[in-house]
Amino acid sequence: MTDKSPLDEQWDDLVSDWQTQPYEKVDIDKLVKQLSKRTLWAKILLGLDMLATIFLFSACYWQATNEPEDVATIIYLGIGALGSLVYTVLLLRIRLQTWKMDASDPKQYFDKTISGIKGALKFAKLLQYTCYFMVPIINWYLWEVSKSTEKPLLIGYILANALILVMYVASHIYQRRRKKELSLLSEFIR
Image (cartoon, rainbow, N blue to C red; front, side, top):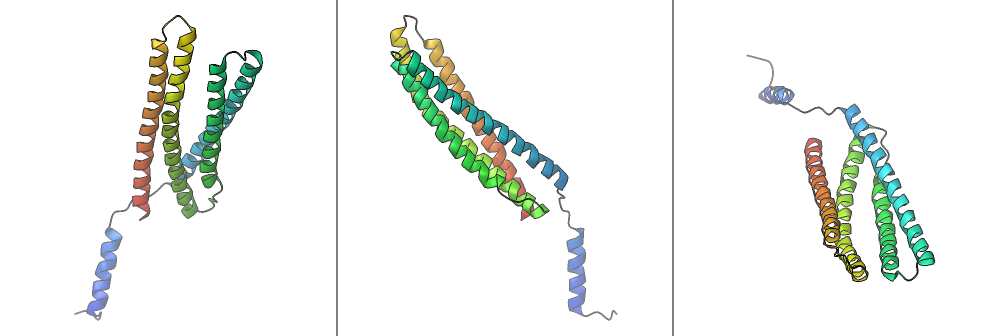
């Protein structure tokens, strides 16, 4: 007989069972590198979005001053510039939520990574809404251009809509991957 009480023996069994349970380890260095890489790419893409917005406003201004008779192009570029501005501002707000977070210890890295993934999901949704917004505008513009040209613009319609479809599908795939990654990371933290 042992000098341990039944409660102590049960406790020892529980501790032994708990210590033998398999668990997943997270490579915090890999997580930090992944977070840094994604942050860099997000900043590069945001910078390109800002440049595209400036370009669209410049193109609209140039079109309005040099070829004011082409009203459809001026309207198209103006709507595109304003849409790009709204898109870029919303994207900046999404990204700043994560970039402002501190990541000085492993728990904060997890929180920042989860916030980054949630931001990526918002980005994908924003890109999908942008595709919805672009379809009527591009098709209207091509319709207006087709009135002034003698050539049919069927190929233009097909290419423009195919490009929007590719953007939408890519954002959907990106969204699914980030959802899966978020669920795996959330499971690990529980």
